[in-house]
Amino acid sequence: MLSIFTKKKLSEEKLQKLFVSGILQLVDKGFPDVAELINTDPEFEINPNIQPNDADKFLMIVVAGNLALIPKHFNDYQDVRLIDGIIKQMANVLNIDHEKLKSLVAKYQSFIHKVNMPSKNILYGMSKAVFHKYELNQFQIEYFRNMKSPNPLFIKRLDDIMLNFQWDWEVIRNKYKITE
Image (cartoon, rainbow, N blue to C red; front, top):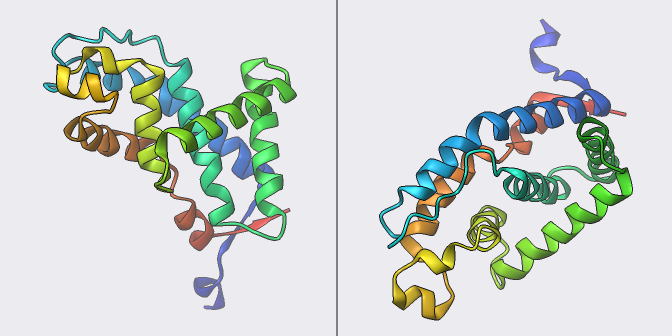
């Protein structure tokens, strides 16, 4: 009877593996749809022609954004261990040097923060990062192109898409007791 009120245990290492495999699979299967939605968005005068296999920048935005959310949900150094473990796991899977990937994630997080100023909404920052990394400004109507700012209607639609690529760390924390 008491087991109903206790959380299931999940090791940090298992969570790291689940995150890495889940994100890689999600981006691999989902990016072609994202590319199509961007290419057919009515706010663009010209089709941006994002290729379904051009997911590298998108993957880094998704990883950087999700890792930036971890400190909001975990503490007592657990956040640092989770982030470092995820980067190590991902570096291993992608066959990239750990330090190189760590640096790349930091650069993407900095970029997300920069394009999102003054907002601290990471989801919105991820959407704006997609807009800038895929150089979508050149495909907008002249008004927004001259402002060098994404059309708010497009960003709202992109926010809805990016929500599908954001892990719900709060649900994980509420459902599992994360152990070292």
